[in-house]
Image (cartoon, rainbow, N blue to C red; front, side):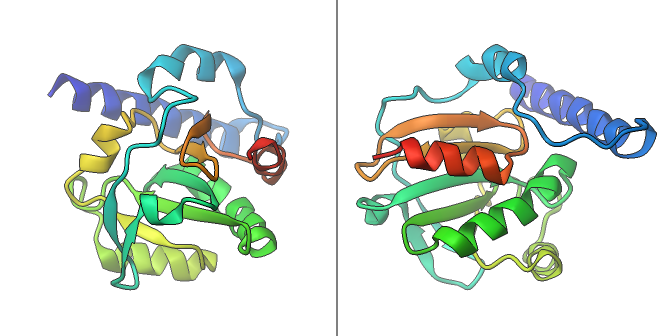
Length: 187
């Protein structure tokens, strides 16, 4: 219960900050990874250098996706929700990145709140259509995978190398430049 209260509080703060940046700040600024935020929350997730926990989830298209089946490929494991402003901000960057790298990199967009906050497959399908998303969208309807990956803030992304090892974690919206640089560093 406490964990959910903390998660909701953090999401409310992020949503408020995103709205402030979008509507009240005079200059529109580029999305920047904020080291102080990442540092403060770094202990809230899995350790870099450890094997990514395996899971199997249903995709938007009805197929099943198992993380361990993707060994040999670089994977960006992105936890998100349709109602999350920073998630909406990063989706176009992720789609552009995916179109450029889909032969070498798999993006798995895990809808982290598929049932717990009223998200439905119809809402997610509409979101995917609106943003032209073509990378796999997975449903974590029981929050089991989100809990395993200790997701406290949305969006949160893990970069997994070809051997299935977590090499980087990103909290907050990612830019295309950040994804490019991080993926290039993976084996």
